[in-house]
Length: 354
Ligand code: UD1
Ligand code: UDP
Image (cartoon, rainbow, N blue to C red):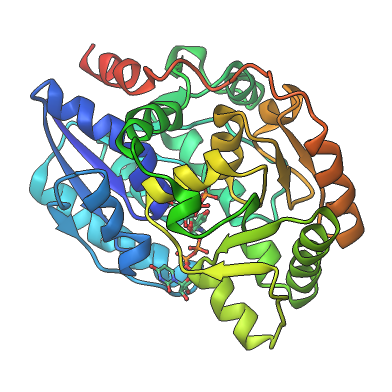
């Protein structure tokens, strides 16, 4: 059996790392095909370094562009590599343009596709990720749903139960495997931090709208001032570009830094009093690490985090962001992690071996 792991962005590298490690541990013939959707050192190579992953065998270097440009270049490149390598399985993870291109290319070549993190739905078709998820799920052969909620979403869309495996989310494996590598480090002294909140913002619907981005940044500043904590904000390159293009001002109590490597980010998450984010993976990690979260969006495809009391949706109104932050700081943090026991990668690899 030969397995191709197709990935292209920061969260895919992180969430596929346990799967790659598992394939390696079992001596299964596999290779990583990187589309190059993310390419800046701190969005890409740094993760291979700190997670101690071998560099990808293939990198298509597609870079950035419109959705059509990115996806089109990826489709051509993935098809070429799959024709040459002839894998039996292609594994993709999540909801990016890389996932869309990977599933389309492989399924049309009649190569079996496994979709890791299948069945997530925000119900919001204006998100490019929602379109990618739906297409990926409907053309994949095996659907690795992280939770019962995601399995139910797939069944509701008429997908065959036979194709679905509830595995947990590989983010739990990634957190467990990598947190141990941070032992002995103290992020507060490394970054000269007192108590702080952590923020990330990168979603297209938030940062490509000057009005929404201005309100979110205003909300971070308000939270910081009213609740007396510095906000540490590692800025995604997409947001950095937009903040500069829109000429937005961010107050000094919001410390804007470049994106950080995964181990540093895990430490920042664990040490934060509160996380404010529009990221999917960060909502999950906050919930797993027992840190309350405010999601700077109107919906989430991770409703499990809200149901267990780990997360609330604030939208982008500054006063509402502050109210949600106050509410979550009072939250009882003893919730159960709904994303599994950290053995998701084992279940995924078991399943394709069978
Ligand atoms: C993509 C995914 C999104 C995911 C996010 C993870 C899609 C449709 N979107 O969004 O679901 O949550 O990755 O971070 O696939 N840029 C750089 N360097 C990089 C990468 C991007 O400077 O290494 C800048 C470029 O200006 C680029 C912009 O960020 O135009 C957006 O990059 P792109 O990959 O298109 O989308 P993301 O916003 O990163
Ligand atoms: N992350 C990181 N460094 C940062 C910001 C985020 O390592 O500076 C990690 C974070 O721990 C999570 C993943 O990146 O695992 C989330 O990626 P992102 O928010 O870009 O995408 P999403 O999960 O929303 O698709």
